[in-house]
Length: 304
Image 1 (cartoon, rainbow, N blue to C red):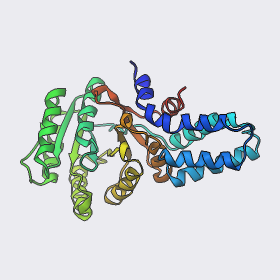
Image 2: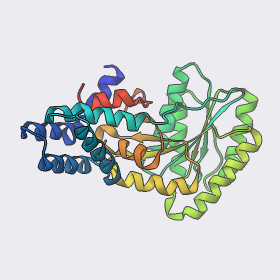
Image 3: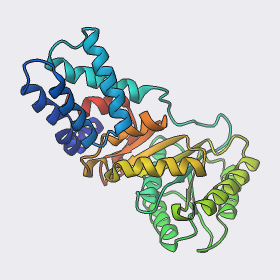
Image 4: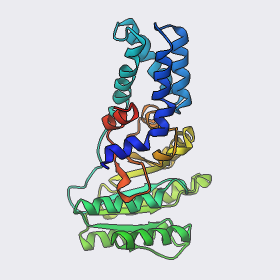
């Protein structure tokens, strides 16, 4: 099964919750009226697209009706698909790769979102692209995080830089950067603690890590990726808002899309936070984490 088919299969629950419901609404109306539009709006909100993003989409739909771009209920589905692609591709960019020396990816996110697993899968992905990879266990708050990263290192054949539990995360990052430069690796991926309940500590910790990395490799970290759990729906957007206050996030990794009916949150994240979704996870397998493609996502979501 190719990734598009896995994506389509992974979005089954979201498709049932969003596009299949839209189809049922469309079938029930001969003409477009306020009742139909009210039902459409409710369906978008219930699919965790978010209130603000739903307002944006409904405004576009009403304009489309005025401009005669939407003439029948059947025109609504392709129109919405096109509008969703527009939202998702606005300012879309791929992972920034350093021109010289290691590319540094700093990965943040609350515990339980799939952060360490995501790092392991990113390591496997880049290794599969023929790149040399180094991992850094700078989530020193939890011994389990260090152990889990080591397991992924063994599984993918990627070395891990680590210190003892409770040690200074910036010191781990410093050693990892030094090692990455000395070994001339292509990708350095750094795991960090995700303790949102102590936001000021987290902010200071991330600022210190950023300073240390930037001093050794100018322009690094090249990406600060926020890992979010799609099953939490609108809560993922709230988390993203909080994390943006703690670190300059360059993109989102959305995990567990296959286990939720709330996949509409992808649209909400991009629309409300103007933050690109750079990677998506649609399964447990190593190959189930892939770079995000807006058109493929919209096609899979609408069952094309």
